[in-house]
Image (cartoon, rainbow, N blue to C red):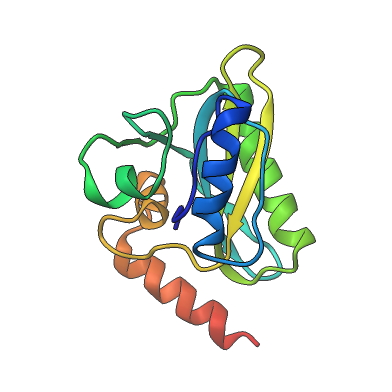
Length: 163
């Protein structure tokens, strides 16, 4: 959960960031920085998945790392995400397409960036086992669509029993 993640702004910082990442694994992923909002979409279903209203994480810091997720209180969720209707429709549509392309079942959370300058939607990652606690974004996104926590649990159990 963002352990060993660094934001590199110069070539000099790269070596230190790689050393940090290699402390946690023997494989490291380096990605281009995307200047945009962090958007999350909860997806639920097997054959006909649905996407909830997207949420947004404002890290309240330079980027959303382990510290801002679990240690500090700087991050803040927004549901619905603070994006325009076109971007909202796009992330929800792409979340379902990605979920289906990866043959996901039950539940997943699909994460994107929506760029500040052009409103471009960029796929970031899929969480095939997203957090599912009272403070997790996944149930909060469905709650924003009128699905209670207990109803959501019942739906997830029913989906698991379909196969």
